[in-house]
Image (tube, rainbow, N blue to C red; front, top):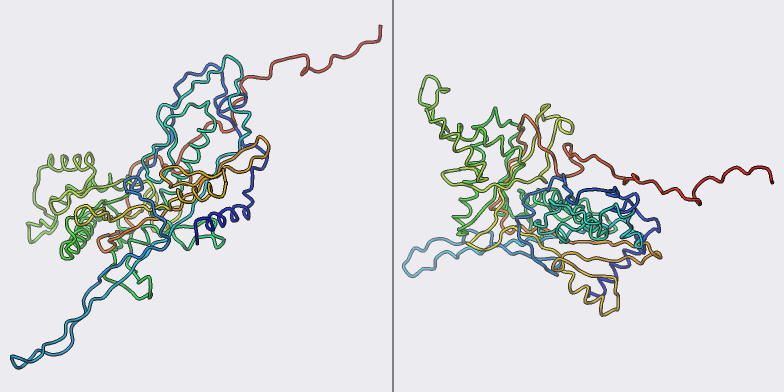
Length: 485
């Protein structure tokens, strides 16, 4: 399919979805002016945001543009045993060496869209009166543009710049949608009509089922190391947890070393609450790991300095790492990893939580990128739109986002954006996942995403009407008429 054909198909799809224009009903509230969420006179200039800024692996992964729809990543998966027998005579033929075996992997794009709220453009810039200030600015940016796949918008825009604030809303919506998708995305959720599509997330890519993209034959040498902790708790099963993670990292590192892929780097990725519970028990268990010294009482352990344990715990927390086999393995805290509670999972005790730990390869052979984002590059598509004199399409963020200004309904305007991303894991055999770990913190921190149980907002959503419409002769009830004089 050519770029013009693809663009025509996208526009036809938009038309089929009735995205031909705004509804004609603007969606408020505005940020300033009468009825605006900050349409209150006498406000101080500095506005503070209490949105929990999500963080995680999504922002740490590099991203690159591509127009390749169905990539094929080749692997040599082994060499079969040779045929024939050893020679008897000095000039006899020897056995024939075995041939190499191959496997090809692929990747799929997802498709995600978000729209601005519909805006009556002539409402922008309205001011109640001289008592309403127009210089309000958000001091702590609610959308840190460090996530690689989130549309860039001006930093700390003035609240009076209504259009830019609505673009910021779109950026936050994409962030809330895509950061959990890094883990949870599953092509099984793709809409058959094509308007919404999910790529294979890391829950799929870090897995034990690997098949050839051409023949469908299994490729077990590409399997990740996946273990199940079976809802054991951090506090009660600390030595077991350490043993699982130690052996997982050893297994992965063994693969890297014996497959001649070193030097490699990895990130251990987990929920923030799980990391702090693990680091609370890690030093004591790690420092006494298999250190039974009384043959009659296996519960008697070797002694260690409590300060060493405290220092080890604090240093791991400050440096974000776990000490395993004498090495400090970097840890990334990720708000997008799914977390179960007793409400949605009967295996989780009340007041506790359960989630997974991932060991994600970042680089191999020194500087080769192992895990990265790819996004469909819209720069060529917009050139095709220009060739066809279509003036309502434009790209941002190095071609990651395609924006469309919908045909206005008189003064009612609206913008829609889409991104087609995917995550690529080139070395699944160097990755691991430990499932179903239970942890019971005293207090759960606030969640970053609106669908999460510990997400908090509150406040006014419909705007303020602090200043009534001034009295005037044209908005007062007509006085009763007396008898004619």
